[in-house]
Amino acid sequence: MAERPLRVLIADDEPLARQRIADLLAREPNVEVIAEVDSGRAAVETIRARKPDLVFLDVQMPGLTGLEVVSSVGAAEMPATIFVTAYNQHALQAFDLAAIDYLVKPFDDERFEQAFARARRMVELEERDRVHERLLAVLRNEVLPPAPVAAPPDAVSRGGYLERIAVESKGKVRFIPVDQVDYIAADGPYAEVVSAGKRHLIRQSMQSLEERLDPARFMRVHRSAIIQLDRIDTLFRGAGGDYEVQLKDGTKLRVSRSKREELEERLAR
Image (cartoon, helix red, strand yellow):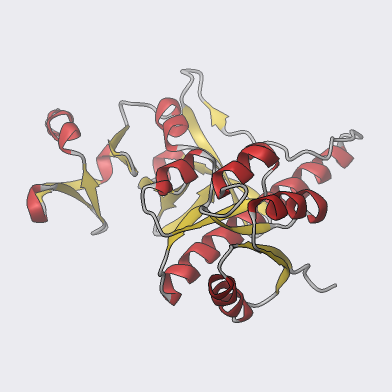
């Protein structure tokens, strides 16, 4: 059976902007543009009626703005969303509303491909989670509601800290022991667990992971990075006065200035 195409809605009041996105999507395999709309109200109606998998949503549109579209539909009911904007200051609002990514006009082909790849990955992860949970429900003779379900539970030690992290891999759920985790990097509203050079996308926030990992072993050194302390090889000042750590595998990660002293103290213990 052929894989179902990714169903995409393009919502932008500028015809050339809609055409640009449509042309770029035409290069991507297994994608169907189900509609193009030119107003916020039309976007709300189409999202409710046709339930696309992904929406490219312009922030500035007549009637309703892109942010008001999300508020009208409800963030929990929105499909995966990439905001398109000419104004960079809307980016933080976009992520607050659980957008996967945003594109600042004019964007180049590479930036579009990066945002689209992230969105496709998110949609596929969501679908795999649903299929996995429904298979488990059949085995348990249970019936689950149609709403999206939570990701598989992680394994927790008696001390309350994570010992293993559940990740999806080729349609299967596997558990990565935390002692095999090199670092965790922010990926939009999600996170990537990096272990032995492999990256695993998980649907958890950095804040949630920071709270659940043993602080004796892990430290959040930047808003975008949590590092296992024994993986750190060198702490040094980078370009522009910022600080970086180099891990034993050569990976370099930024360190917030506010975290530098604490990190130095912990590495010296």
